[in-house]
Structure formats: C-alpha cells, structure tokens
Image (cartoon, rainbow, N blue to C red; front, side, top):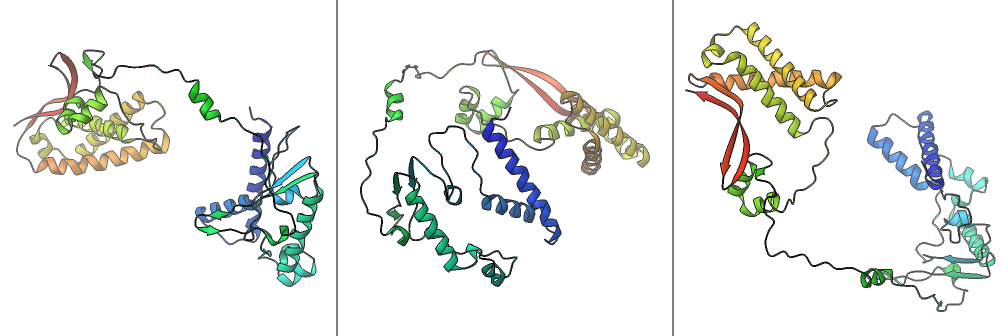
Length: 339
C-alpha cells in the first residue's frame, strides 16, 4: 500500500500526464522521444511538496514558502547567480500581453520586484531567519545576492551532531574468517557441465573465481527471450530436423515441399520444448515470429551442410558423463556425424 507521500506523488504524476495529453490541441505531431522530453520538462517545472502532518522540519520551494510563517527559517543557495531569479516569460503568449497583465516573470523589472517582495516576506516570517550561500563552486568564488546585502553577516551556532558512522563503526562485531585455502567443491558433481574445463583452459583464475569462489555476475535482464533461450531453440530445432533427415544423402534428394514441411515441424517442436521449459516465454505473436526465424536459420544452415561430403548423423543432443580428478561432470554432445 502507498503511504501518504507516495499517494500524493502518484496523484501529481497523473496530473502531469494529463498536462501532456492537453498539449495535443496545440503541439505538432511528435515522436516518443520528443513526448518524453516534454513530459520531463513539465515535471521539472511543476511545484510539488507532499503535505505533511506535524513535520518538525519541512523543505520547501521558493514560491511554496512565500506567505508562510515559521518558527525558524533557513534559506540556502542565495548567491548572486541564483537570486534574484531570471525572468522567464511564457513562450506561447506575447510578452507585451504578459507585461500588461502584470505577470511577474514577463520582464526583469517585475521579476526583480517579486523576488524582492519574497525576500522581505522571508525576513518577517520567523523570529529567527538565516540566509546562506556557498563560498565557492569548484574554482569559482561566489558572492551573496544583492537582495540580502543589508542582512548582517555572522556565524551560526550549530548544535553538535553525533557522527553516526563513527558510532556504528565503534559498535561493529568483527569475525575472523580463515582465507588461507580456497573452498573445495562441496559436491563431487560439478554444476555447469563441462564449462569448468573450458574456463580452466581459457583462464585458470577465471575458473577458480567462477567455480570455487562462486563469484558470478548477475545476468542482465532482457525483454522476451534471452540468449540462453535462443540457444536452446536452435539446439532443439537442429536435433529435431536431423532426426528426420538423418543423412547427407537424404538432404540431397529430399523434395523442396517435403523439406519445408520438415523444417516447419522442427521449428514447431523447438518452440514447444522451450514453452515447456519456460511457461509464458513464447506466446501469441512472439511464437509465430520465432517459428519464422528458426525456419530461416534452418534453411541457411542446410545450405552449409549441402557443401559437405557424405555423412550420417549418429547422435543428437546425447548426454555423457565424464569423470576427472575425482569430479563428475555431465555434458551433452550437440551432434555426432559418421563420415
């Protein structure tokens, strides 16, 4: 369930979506990226402060604080570059009309008058008012705003605050873990098939990190099918197809219509296999697209097979068990041909 602040934030978000929809009457046709840019601009320009109940400290925007009374007030960031604000007339309304209507942001003069009035209001809004500004920004020296030039400068006494990081660090409970020897395999059967042998051959340290320290990175989420699913589809496709063809001689003599039907059935079988392994991964239009993609891949690969000499497929996706150095590894032979 949403708390009060989250509920108000969601309501403001829906309001911004409504503002974007109203632009349809005046804005030209735009791309999704342009619409996103408009929405970001609307959100950045919106004034929003969740209503809080009995909050001892509130963080407010400039216009939100105007006219309010406080027990104590601290206004920060009042450099001459940030305050007063620059005039920002509405680009959709003639400036002359905005000035005539008395809109403060229409000109530098009226904007300055508004900011001066807000500054004077801040001074009257609390018994204790603090104006502050940064002294430097990287290598640039910053100066206070001219609107607070008459406010006497001074040092503010701040209450002593506990360094919670130091408190937590002092209360830490340390445990010494011997790390002189790397952890051995907990089980005699190695997960990941023969991957450990490939990793050991490519880089012993990578094999050590992956298979003994279990230092594996998180998989990157992907929309739809990931690389593993697509690999499984291709394996299932070729296993099913060569279960029908069996030999190079059969590939050379099979009729085009019969081959197309065999490819179609193999693609359907591959899709069904992945569906069984991952329910919901291939549904509707996505399944149709995968069947078309797999059929295209099958035809392209069979052209490569036609360029080979005679052979007979004697094994497809055959599981094998390998014993080495006291470990048991389960692997699978994609395909075995007899020449």
